[in-house]
Length: 262
Image (cartoon, rainbow, N blue to C red; front, side, top):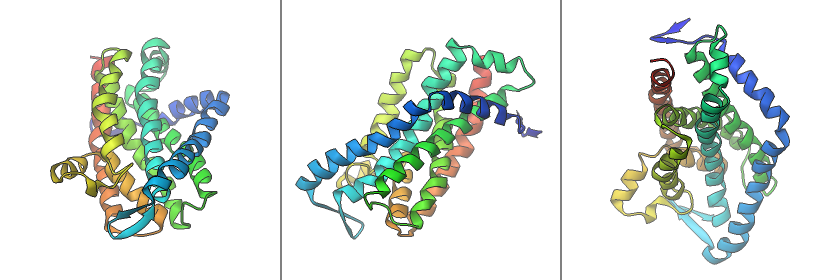
C-alpha cells in the first residue's frame, strides 16, 4: 500500500516487534528509570521546593507546587523517551549496528523501517508514562477517570517527538552532534514550556515563543487531564501535536531516504 509518495504497509509492525524483543531482554533497566525517577523528583520538589514555594496560581487555580509539577514530569517523560529513542538509539541501530541494512535486505521498505522506529519510540513513551502514572497516582496526584486519558496522549506525543527526533537523525552527520539539538531544542523546552513555573511569569514575547514549543501544549493538556478539568487548551494541545505528526512524520521519511538511499 502506498500512502502518497511513501511505501508503508502493516509490515512496519515487524520492525516494532523486533525492538520489543530487544526491550524485553533488558526490561528491568527500562522499568526502573520511569519507576524511580518520579520518586526522586517528588522527593526533591515535593519536600524541598514545595515547602519554600507553597502554592502556585495557574489561570485562576491555586495549586500546590507538587501538584503543579507532576503533569510536567509526565510530559517530559513522554518527550524524552520518544526523542532519545529515535535519535541516539536509532542512530546506533542505523550507523553502528547496521540493523537498518539488515532489515532493508528483507522485503521491508525504508519507509516501513522508519515508521516502525517512530512507532516504537511512541510505544516507549507510552510504557514509561504508564509506569510513572502509577507511581504519582499512589500519592494522589492524578484525578481519575480523567487521568486515564494521559495514556493515549502519551502515544500521540511520542509520535510527534519521535518523528522530530528522526528528522534530526536524518540530518545529523555524527552521533556527537546530537548535543546541538538537545542544547538548542530540548533544553529550552525543558525549562520554558510551563514545566517548572507558570508561563505567566515569562515576558510577553517569551510566552508567545513558548507557544511554538510542542512540549508547551503537551504539558498543558497533561496538566488539565491530571487535574480532571476539561478546558479548550486540551483540544488546542491535541491539534498542535497532530499537526506536528502530520508535518514531521513524512519529513522524517524524506530525510532518512535521502540519507540512506540517494
